[in-house]
Structures are given as C-alpha cells and as structure tokens.
Length: 346
Ligand SMILES: [Zn+2]
Image (cartoon, protein in one colour):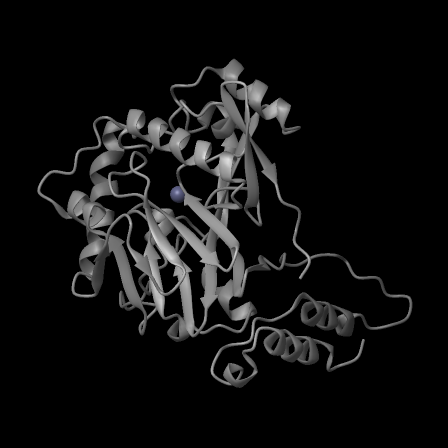
C-alpha cells in the first residue's frame, strides 16, 4: 500500500469540502487504511498469519452533508434475558422481538455510542460515555478519540443529553475530577439540570430499584455540580452552531433531548435514549426501559419522534443502537421497525 494513501485521501476530502485551508487547524480523523497498514507491518514472515486478536477499531466515519461525523464505540452491557432492563415487558414479547431480529432469545445487549460531529470549525461531542463508572469494558471514548487523532482539548462543544452515568461518566478525569474537555463549551437542557440538582429528584415512577435510586441521584449531582459554573443552558427549539437544533424528548428523563443536525439537504436525528434496543423498542414503543423516569411520557415521545422520522424518511442515530448506530425507521402495524444502515462507504 502506498504510504501516502491516507494523507492524499484526507487532502482530497478537505479540498472536496472546500476546507483545504483549515486542514492545519483541525485534527485529522485517522483512516481505516492507516489501521490496516499498522496491522500488516506487525506480520513478521511470509508464512506468518495474523492471529486476528486485538481491539476492534471502534469508530466509523460518515458524512452529514458537509459535516464530518464519527460514531464512537464506548462499550456496552448485556446479560441473561432475565436481567434485561424491561421489567414491564413479558418474556414472550421480548423473545419474539429478539427472534424477529435474528438475535439470541436468552440474552440481551445494549451498546454505548458517542457521536462526534465536525461542523465547520466546531468539534461537537454528543455525550461522553461511561468514563470509569462501569468498569474496564466501558469508557473507551478517550481511546477512540486518540485513534482518530482528536485530543480532548480540541473538542469545542459537549452536549450532555441527560444525566445518566453512561452519558456523563466521561465528563471528568477520574483522577483529578477536572473537566476532560477542558476548552469546550458544555451544554445541558435547563430542565434536566434542575431536575437532578433540585431538592428532591423523584425516581419513584421509574423502574430503578428503590435501593439504587439514591446512588443514581448522588452520582448525577456529583457530575452536574462539578461543572456547575460551566453549564450553558439550552432548551427545545434552540438552533446552535449553524446546523444543530435541540429537540424536546422527555420521558426517559425530564430534560432528555434529541439533536437534529442539518447540512444542506442532509439531516441526522440523534434520538439518544428515546429508544434503547433496535428490535425491542421499535417493535414495542410502549414498553419503557427501567431507567425511564416518566414511562408514559417516554412512550408519547417515542411515537412522536418515530412518526415524524418515518414520514420524513429521516436518517437516525441512537446512543444504544448496534454500532455504528445509523438507520431509518418505518411503521409496521402498531409498532415500528428499525432499518439498520450498513457501514457507510465514504
Ligand atoms: Zn443511555
């Protein structure tokens, strides 16, 4: 492979975008061809075969019009179906939805995805993954950013979509407890901040076990208060950064937001945690996940966003969809179907 392939393609891409002059200012996203060259160099002899061990790349680049976007894999969790976080579903509903998607019917899994979007000179991060909160198989965001050549200090805007640990855990350095994205503006819906940091956040309508509620609240308060002087409050209908609209998506939490990116005719709706499983949540939009603070409102929000996205044929991204978390939705009977987008060619 020609050693300059990746730099040539990057320069060509920037020229195509009219960004050649900005190339020196912005981090280069590493390419998959770059990773392949490294792997090839490690093979020592003509008969040696790679053992196929090692990390998956964990990132996937795609375009939203003129914007460069990257899906970043932060980890995920899963387990036996008896421990799945849909306590109001009966097992037959869950197994039928899983079987319909050709998935094992005795287990569940939920990936964690973070979205990075380069909008002109802005590098926008939507959520920050788990950080250190859920063990060594999670919290991979920083290594993913390093793999695409992005330093945390180069992020210019961080949107926290809601105050759950798999979204805010990467905000603070685990050792120093200082902001990881030190130069970024930090945004949160005012209603979300006020719910968690108010005098009595109420999780009694959620499916979170009683014994786990106080810890979830304390952790949210710790992270939100650590950045108290930095938060810039946003609300539904706000249009920011020349191509981003904040959408109200309450129910999962009171101030949970979705984000709509627009560039030219291209759009991407990041629905975040409006839905959690590509088979279960789309087929059964009225089944709340245990973490939904307002389950009935969550169902209303799910149907509202999905009806609009199905009618408009909107391209979707979700925090817990199968990597790289892109797809579309169509209506099927009383529910919906998630149509997964294949790994995109650039
Ligand atoms: Zn989540």
